[in-house]
Image (cartoon, rainbow, N blue to C red; front, side, top):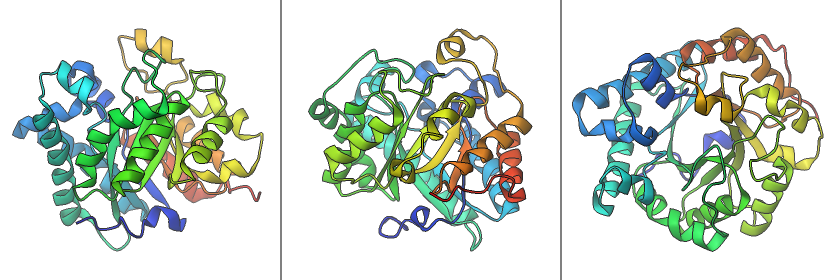
Length: 321
């Protein structure tokens, strides 16, 4: 059974750290080959499982240091049908991989959770297509039908909620939320933005949040932004509006480069951890509900530490809207 599914502490405004860029850390810091960025494939071996667990440990130790909760996401971003088949997974094996990822985190929580550092387990769902471009576009019904398999598998485990990450067009988000509602599991939706602060589809973030809510009766627990540098979307947040109160989390990229530039990069651009921390913390000026903060591609424990130092210094208090 899930520990927090019926009373998500993420909705209580207490601060939560997230882990950082798992896949980029595995590839560039550990020299691991990850076909299709499918980190869950490492769970087939003890060595691979240990690598992923050490990733979680580094961030949990930091969360304890800063006396905040932590949101740990399963390494299942590519554990949906199309991507699994590219790696030779049958539907049964893929469902087992999703369960195995949650089981690892459930055991980890029993070992590491403390009164000052509650651990929330999120079952990660990625896009059907490329996270950096709209190369495969579904309508909402098709998206619901596609993602329900993975969501149903995760809903039957100890996850506290599921989370759709790096979504770049609205209909896929709507389909994910509808599938989560049918499975009776909480869901968050995280959009990825280009350097102009818009989704790759051209939609504004405001339109994406409002359309998703309108089409799903506001079922999503909250929205997030991930896989974009704070400088890419700060101006978007300055526009104001009630829709901003639906955004609780940011998992920003370390690099200021565009997604196209990152796709072509052969070396990791981990940016400047100090600047990353300050600029991400500064987003609290525009996001009144911003209580979930961490990193995405290119980030590691250094970025998380600087981010939470900046937040604790209080040099960027939430705006009163």
